[in-house]
Length: 195
Ligand SMILES: [Cu+2]
Image 1: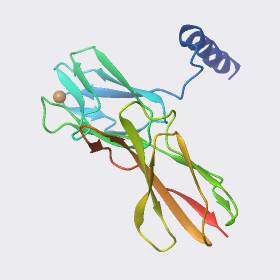
Image 2 (image 1 turned 90 degrees about the horizontal axis):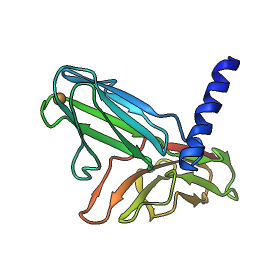
Image 3 (image 1 turned 180 degrees about the vertical axis):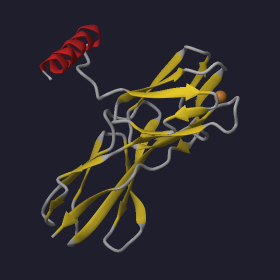
Image 4 (image 1 turned 60 degrees about the horizontal axis):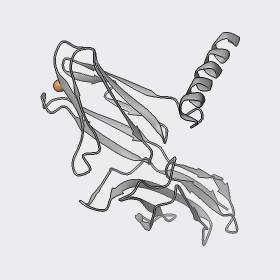
């Protein structure tokens, strides 16, 4: 136990020295095989890197689906491609060579606190950073007994909410590019209980 903790500290220390960015969220790895992504669905924390490694004998790609086309990595046996996803959402991708190969990266959002009153300010964390230039975050909110509706579109990493009445409220968000326009799938919802 002690050894693994020290090892993590040493690794983060090196990251700090190299990038001055601190110790980031845990990286996610996907194995690319002939012909599937393993696992096909992964969850990555906001700001985490996702790395695909070609462990098969064929060439593949990891290509973010339209309309965002957020990333494109060409892979050959033994090679890797890494991208970083900062914003909550659901990101699907595919292989351009093998049409049966599909995968999903889910990036969760968070809300705090998760319960309170009508005088509580709830903070929804949408991303690890403010929106990159040309992008923004689309936030939807679901009233007690209602459906998801647009709440607001922001470029900040967080947004706040106050509840008009008691009940359970839900939030979800996605990454939107302004031009050419395109939006990711929404994140899984998070909820607050207002009493
Ligand atoms: Cu492929």
